[in-house]
Image (tube, rainbow, N blue to C red; front, top):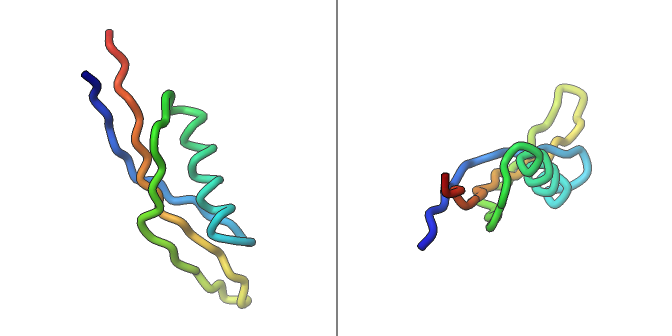
Length: 68
C-alpha cells in the first residue's frame, strides 16, 4: 500500500503556459522526491504595467511518502 501527498505550486513564464508548468515541476522536483503526477488545475495571464504578459500555471503535484 502507498500514501501520496498533493501540493499546489504555481510556475510563471514570459513565453507560455507550458514553460510555466515545466518551471513549477522542475523547481518543486529539486526539493520534493518521488514526484508521481502533475495536473494543471488553472492557467491565467498577468498583464504588467508595460503590457508584458506573464503566463501562470497552477499545478497539483503528488508525491509518495517514504516509509521510515
